Structures are given as structure tokens and as C-alpha cells.
Image (cartoon, rainbow, N blue to C red; front, side):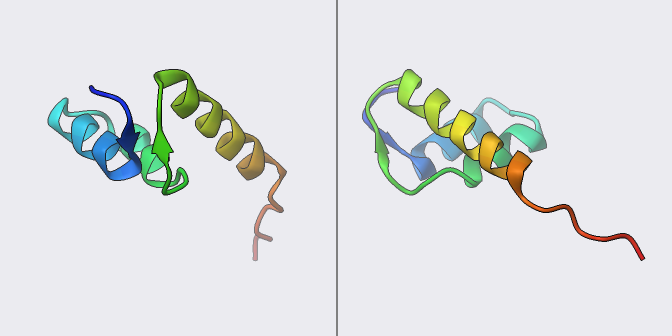
Length: 61
């Protein structure tokens, strides 16, 4: 994987490596910006996971 890379670049690379669907879903959820290093991607994933953890859970019916 070469950097800088966009979200779409990362998703295409992961698809080419036959990444699991949960990894692909996570990558598809990151911001549409250019990432300069793998650390940039990791920080964005951490931010996204933290944001998802704080989101209210849907009520069960």
C-alpha cells in the first residue's frame, strides 16, 4: 500500500487482499480525506470506533 492514500484506495487495497467484511465496513466508514501514513489511518479508525461507542443504542421493541 502506497501513501498518501484516500479512503477509496484503502478499501480497494483491502478488497484485493480479501479482507473480512467487518474490516471493509470499518474502512468504508472513515473520513474521505487523504491519509499520509498508516498511523493516520489508525488514528481515524480509533476516532470512528470511539464515536460509534458513544452513539446512543437503538431501543429494542
